[in-house]
Length: 343
Ligand code: ATP
Picture 1 (cartoon, rainbow, N blue to C red):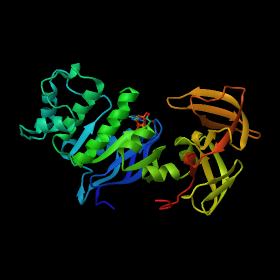
Picture 2 (spheres, rainbow, N blue to C red):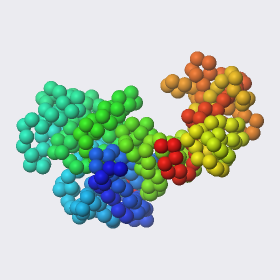
Picture 3 (tube, rainbow, N blue to C red):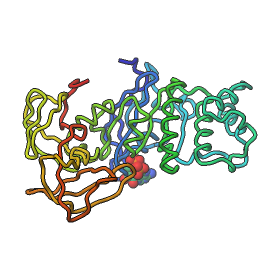
Picture 4 (cartoon, rainbow, N blue to C red):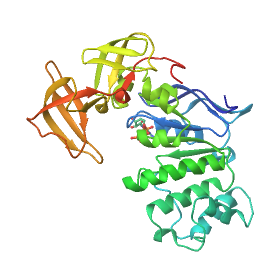
């Protein structure tokens, strides 16, 4: 267990009748990266802004160790901010943007700009105009600017969502590495599962202003706490199952899930829980077909229900054709709070 650095306590933000953040408690460990993940409008950005000190309506406490930051002005909190669109100063060059962050904190260290550019992979970019940089490069500069004064906490609000998909994936990996190397505690807002799981040591799932679950990627992926969370995390079908000694038995058959707890549980099936396979035991007919990047998503009519399934691109059947499916444990989740199981 990491040493706790940031503690958010009883945080509530009310906009008129709307409770955007509802009595949230959250801890972030020293050097830990936590992702706030949830659907649009669930209050992620408002919570982040409250931690930064940018929401005057916020009620609750923000502590750093024994220090109470709640009433401290934004610029004294030791926090670095990175937003979706970088918000760089267009009339300054790259070095000028990074120096601005340093000057704000009265730091004059001539080597710091070079250090930061090395860290974000933009060595030699000092004199480049920020308007001539790609979106990905601009976000790296924004990150360098935020990290330059050595903040104790970095807050990132959808830092990659303005970028196209391929770049986003690459930059998410780079950013994950970079945050580890910088060793700064960080809270990242995102609505993208892959991004959250790539970046964060721990994910906090938010819904309607509340944090409904926190855990590692593996914990929340395998054990979404309730039905709404399971659906948000991609489970299109939810069924009852009997699980005994790592084998789940339910309406669609039997499958080994060694990490699953014994008992009668709800299980969630992601599309890849059912895979097209000529030797599969489940017979159905394809009713829908969507080509994805590296597989085909199928909608399949079984005897009593319609389910999502996946097939390889080369051999995916067409709508109207028969298909046989097998169960794949990789696509299954067991709903409920099952701490420690399978870790
Ligand atoms: P998204 O992923 O779409 O950015 P979010 O989870 O970050 O969403 P917030 O931006 O925190 O959500 O907004 C939470 C709720 O609070 C929304 O219903 C939003 O309309 C409302 N809200 C946010 N800021 C204000 C404000 N300044 N005044 C009134 N309502 C606001």
